[in-house]
Length: 277
Image 1 (cartoon, rainbow, N blue to C red):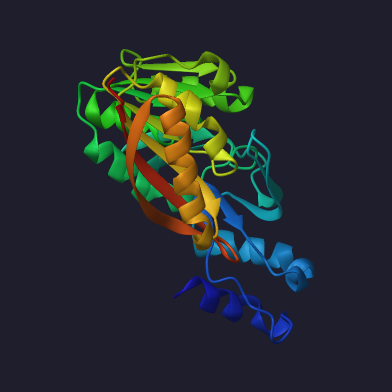
Image 2 (tube, one colour):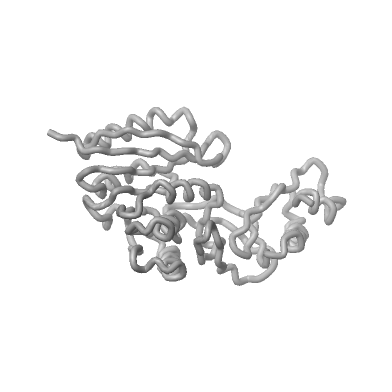
């Protein structure tokens, strides 16, 4: 039985008419994350209890209350039912992630992109992840390719879990976690590929990513949340910033997922080569 049908069977007669019942939830480890219509607020506890009954992997249920805020990427969730300990281990493609999804953002919509990136990287490369969080991109790469990975994270709590996850996945020999501002501590002229996995004003970090590339150039994967009509402007800015850093660029754009009304999550795959005198 589908989740929406299960909810209607359990509590449907008490729900207001013409209000959309959620069709699903996101699960991170043992924690279910729900988004509910505001008119379902008084039924939130009933829905949470029913959710735990629907999927017995779930021991905690939280509801989204606010958007993710700032460069620290703090999600806005409130625990509604179940175990108050929301620190969990999430398994994704054979990679283990320990985190608290109520305190740190762990996007489920990026799974295909994380898998794709780990499949195109050669094993002898140096990868820089400038917005590592708990290692969503960099752990897949380190574990599956054997490449050397430097992961930078500004949020101390996320960095703590990142360090734990490096040990949990047994990649201490090839992955390093740095705590701080990626604009101030990124390696220079070392990386074959740089990941800019932040969605807001990410273009501002492109000059620092380019400085990190090896003298032969390489790839930058720039993520951004924007309307489709802005893609040409971002492309022009990429070319301008790259020329200022001494690079020619070619790039392609892919849609990762829907982000919000009128806004999509895109990734710009940028190939940068040094301009030779």
